[in-house]
Amino acid sequence: MTVSRAWLSWRGRDLLTVSVAGQRADGDAAAQSRAAIARALAEIVDAGFAPDHILRSRLWARDAAARTAASDERRAALAGGKRGGSASFFDAERFADSGDMIIDMIALRAPAAARKTIVEYDPPIAPPLFVALDGMVALSGNTDVSPAFADQIKRIGDKIDRTLDKAGAAWPQVVTLSAFIAKSIDPAVARAAIAARFPRLACPIEISSVVGFSAPEKLIEIETTADLRG
View 1 (cartoon, rainbow, N blue to C red):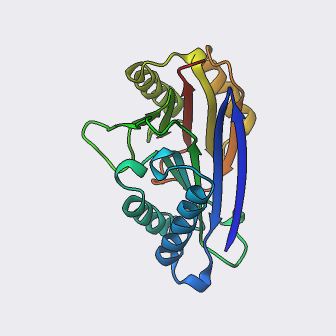
View 2 (view 1 turned 45 degrees about the horizontal axis):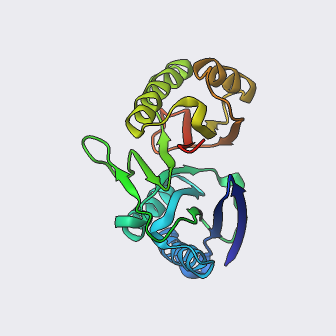
């Protein structure tokens, strides 16, 4: 099983990103996901982080069917306090022949007394609207199914504005904005559109290209993280 670990120190905070790739020797996409998620959780605990201090998780899958299977397994395994902001994509070009999914988990080292707040959509759906832990706020990936790319960015921006306001966060406190765009979209066009929609954004715009999302109409998904202490 392929495992990678990346540490980030941010304003006195320690964050750990663990990435685990599923292996076909473990079975189909669902079985691979169960094994990979269990390994990622074990890596987080071994590094001294609490499982309920997971801030965000991200799934990559070989195709749409594998994305659905992996998402179902993540929902079962990362339940209760282990839930974090979430997103999922599929893109066969990211994979060799050895597996059908990859799980990324990002955990924040927080004081033992810190408790994660999980805020749901209304009505609730699989991912939370956002989670907050020790002053860090992680929004789940936001998408839209409007026919035009520009309209999707506008409506996603409206959702993020409302969610940040609900979380008590302001745009200058946003420390990461990661946009995952369909490969049919020019990254330069996407970057310009995002910058125009979020003029108060102070952090870099990270853009990644993917093949697909949870629905074929979707062309972009945006993850946002804010630091209320910033």
